[in-house]
Length: 330
Ligand SMILES: *[C@@H]1O[C@H](CO)[C@@H](O)[C@H](O)[C@H]1NC(C)=O
Ligand SMILES: *[C@@H]1O[C@H](CO)[C@@H](O)[C@H](O)[C@H]1NC(C)=O
Ligand SMILES: *[C@@H]1O[C@H](CO)[C@@H](O)[C@H](O)[C@H]1NC(C)=O
Ligand SMILES: [Cu+2]
Figure 1 (cartoon, rainbow, N blue to C red):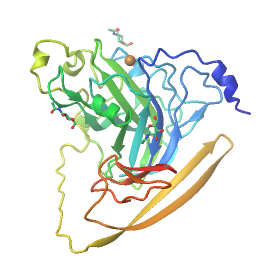
Figure 2 (cartoon, rainbow, N blue to C red; figure 1 turned 90 degrees about the vertical axis):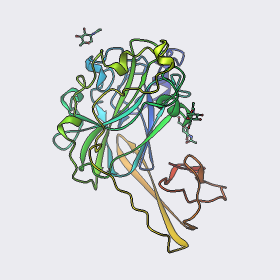
Figure 3 (spheres, helix red, strand yellow; figure 1 turned 135 degrees about the vertical axis):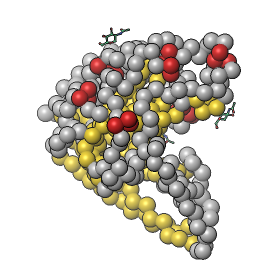
Figure 4 (cartoon, rainbow, N blue to C red; figure 1 turned 30 degrees about the vertical axis):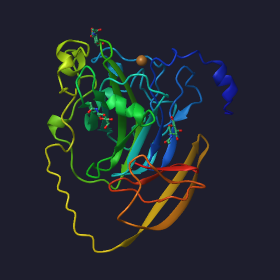
């Protein structure tokens, strides 16, 4: 069918004055993917994201919508981001600017049985947490939180698919929890990805939870009153959910002496555009030679049309394509 954007926009009702929101798009291993468009009919929408209908938060940690928002079922034209290498990065972009700076950021994966996540009910899956950021510094009352960092990072959050995760079809669940009022506000959105080239470290039983089930409405990290007297001196915050995937394993990083002064950096950018009738793939390769001893810091520009500076990022960041005019160290 012909997709008439003007007709879809005409059906839109006004979102609640940007007080809330959710993940609107993704950058996955260098490829941009649009999310579903809330407040619009789902008819004709194609996305890797599971649908969510409004900007409103979920206010109940044990409601079925805690898994993949309301309603989180597959689109009729549901897509999957295929060929996402384990070890690559995924950025989720929220509506700008995200309004809630107090609370944790969390990212989960759940492997789907069979050959696709399409039509799999997220409540039937086992989830493990691959990333979290709670109270970064300061006090519960006046500190810097993962949510504040997300806002400072262009209202986006970049996470790395652990290289040790087994290959397969997964739902990835980005979540920001807002604690400025109680009950806590949950904003989870899910997307379908196919992880390739993975490892063999399965999550342990203790690292796996269901949603609903992973949180309780009485979890200390969800009932905390950030305006209380205690909060003004409290400098720790218990992040809700299971222990982090891989957290029991020891990670050893060995840095040897630098014996070379030059190395070759090759960056491959892949742009994919997908429609309901087919897939077009464009591949672009940039090769540059830079000293390894210097580089652009995290979030700095490292490429783009007209850019003449360094194209090398300081370790461990990678120069990540955003658009033709801008690449960034992430
Ligand atoms: C939360 O949702 C669960 C499941 O729908 C329901 O049983 C419970 O009563 C709800 N709790 C609150 C506080 O609304
Ligand atoms: C907390 O960390 C942020 C970012 O690193 C920094 O800008 C801020 O000054 C820190 N605040 C405190 C109270 O240490
Ligand atoms: C900031 O986020 C928007 C999407 O919300 C994206 O289009 C833009 O490229 C991002 N800017 C940078 C510098 O990454
Ligand atoms: Cu809100």
